[in-house]
Length: 394
Image 1 (tube, rainbow, N blue to C red):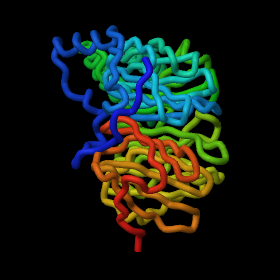
Image 2: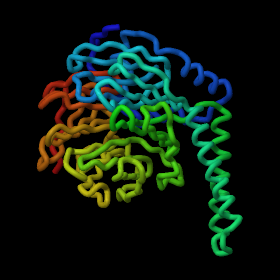
Image 3: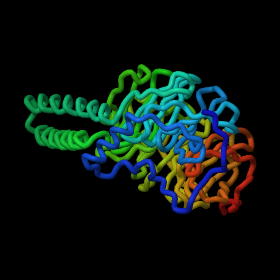
Image 4: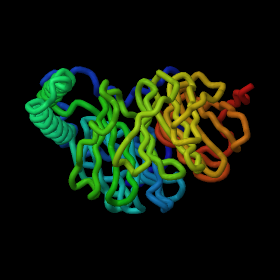
């Protein structure tokens, strides 16, 4: 259905960036069945889709189409820069948290209950590709194989190695028991972000260290969690490719994971920050990235994450997403916050949406045009219209 914007976006004070983790509460059997129902219930067609909570927005490859995802399984798309929107056909009603396109035609969206959706027609129609139940079964199969391999190593291990192997085996068994417990109550954990290189190769990441990889467009997925140094199973919140080709994941507890071989192997790198990072974006320069999160924190690297420095933003708001175009960089967050750097040598300046509604995603739509999504849906911003200037960082 075609939809016109009813009102501009955005946010009430205190909007929580952790909104996409709402599914992490303990589920009773009855609520588990309710979650399963949402995975089987198509999103309802409604004119409110453009003014309801939207969590992410992306361009469909190198096309002009913009696609946004949000609560109740809403996916909307625009072919005129965000002036008019059409609601897509979506087979689920769970909250969707991330969207990305590997080409102009092929896109993926992820969300609560471990939902992974795929579109082959630029986001007009979507099919369910994976659920949390399937993801959990893949993870269980992987850890069972690792348990068997560790047991075999124990049989022939040197005496000096037995203690470490027994410790590792106990840890694996404990992890298996936790996974089986999660599986018993249904598809609990959400995916939080998705990235695709092309129509075949991509990753989905999420709560409690979930990460799955595909090299055939999502027909089959592989559990990649054991390839990351994340024994504490911290949440993985955002993934992107930066200039020079490195893949970067940002997450809970300041964690940064970097791959310089397109995701085959990963290194954990010290960000110098212990709080949660909710987003990461490149600048186009080789090896340069900004990871951002709680209380206006922005960490900056120019060497693929080997070293980081904290940048002054002048903001204390949680930052959720970012985008760059040329030298212009825009970060968005809670309370209608935008943190903008107009050129590489400029200071950050903070502006606030007059309505203070929280912002979850941004696309730089032109030299002075932004498309924002968040608590109140979607809105186009031209220049500083509707903004309250807070000033540059001193």
